[in-house]
Amino acid sequence: MKPYPPVSGNTVRWIEGPEYYTRLLAALDSAQHTILFETYYCRDGEIFRSVMKALVRAAERGVRVYVMLDAVGSAPVLRLASRMLLRHGCHLRIFNPLRLSPWYSNLRRNHRKMCLVDGRLLLTGGWGLADEWAGLKGQGLGMGFWMDAGVEVDGPVTAHWSDLFARTWRRCGGEVETMRPVAGDSGTSVCRLAFSQGRQRQDLFRSLLQRVRKARERVWIVTPYFVTSRRLRRALRHAAWRGVDVCVLVPGPYNDHPAVRYAAWQHISKLIRRGVRVYEYAPSFIHAKVVIVDDWASVGSCNLDHWTQMLALEANQEVWDRAFARQAAERVSGWLRSAQRLDRDPLAQAPLWVRWLARLIASVERTLYQFWVA
Image (cartoon, rainbow, N blue to C red; front, side, top):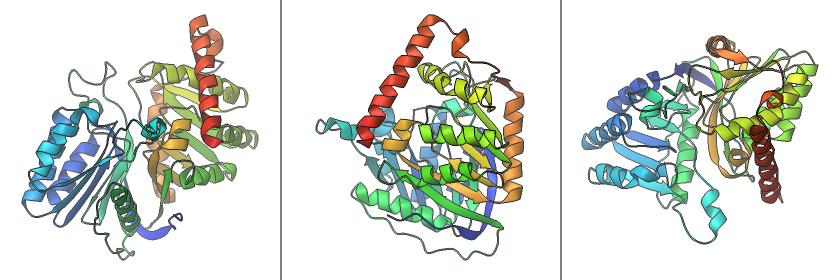
């Protein structure tokens, strides 16, 4: 499968925090023809049921509704989703149901998050369907609301998102009609759908690496799990050596996987010594996946860890637009003001058991990476 080309004529809007669910519900209620909905993480609660009910309302007024959920990420709600959706005429597919053999096939997951309404209006980012992202009482694993970010896109690039969804849907044993390209003359942004499908198709990571290597002024990265490839870490160090402003924002003490935070410290210490600014977000857990390189930005579902790179299905919206990149940088700057800068090696100040755990995780990570690459 070849990479999708850049497409001009798009309008891109930044979305942040719980605003996503307001935009999502409004888009679902405005649908007239088709809804393509794909997500990884779902948990029963107010957010999940609100979205399910909106999908049902759309189906009841004659909209063709296609919903794709991951068998692992959405496992606790699969039966509930089936009851709510199928009886009202929605189409539902479960990506990669668990099997006994071969066991390693269960590691391949669909981590993409997107909603495409009427082949025209796209929403994508890092959100799942769970109350954690809305900051509802009693949710968030004690970490407040999960900060996230994404985009709302209107324009011809949505045809590529429709095509990618249809290809994945067919892998799950179904057929879905692909929209025709939308004429591109209303917006000013050039956009490209970047995707990955495991180690055989790493268009998204190649594009990111190429951008970092050619950066002139700025490389800003926001990611929840900074256990990334050696090539990307090397590219970031070289960019800082060239005088590029390289900044990495990761979660701090509020983290859904604390052990991964410690493993990331293994990589962060060397970046700090080479002049990379590294911050830990303090107010709550930050789950956003944002990369800004000069006038280019990439926003979507993609984490920067080895599991994502080698096994997960991911999709990001790349945007060539100076105004949008400036807006994204302003939003990230606001997060940085609420973050703590790491001025020295965090592992050197950590307890012995943390240093031991970080080295163990890093060792396991390298072993698994070599296993999948081999």
